Image 1: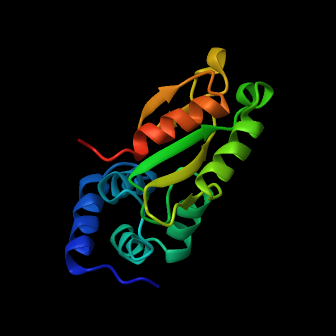
Image 2: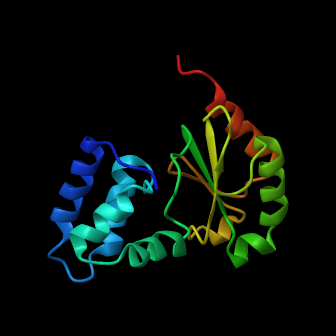
Length: 160
């Protein structure tokens, strides 16, 4: 198991302390850890378990059950493709296949250069504009493979 550096361990303990008194704080704690680090480091699991008086298995089970929680550091840009029914009916599978081919990765992976992470997401609430994607927190609807390529190319350009 990955060991957290002391400054990260201290940050996890501060996050737990902020949420500890709330009822059933585990999911809130994990969301806060991911917001802070960009993912839930494996080494955070025993710290959270100790601080919340839970087993490591309980914490690990929640981290791995919910698709939202990342287990690895994300790329510089996160591409989330909706996989819900409305988007599926409007070509989300074809778009996902194109995105995997274009980026050279599968869902829950990051490109070797660390620029892009590809994630499935289940309903962005943009059903009237399916298929939809969230790229770095920005919603895009009626996304075609060509539109996807344009968005990725724009994100791949160095900042000026």
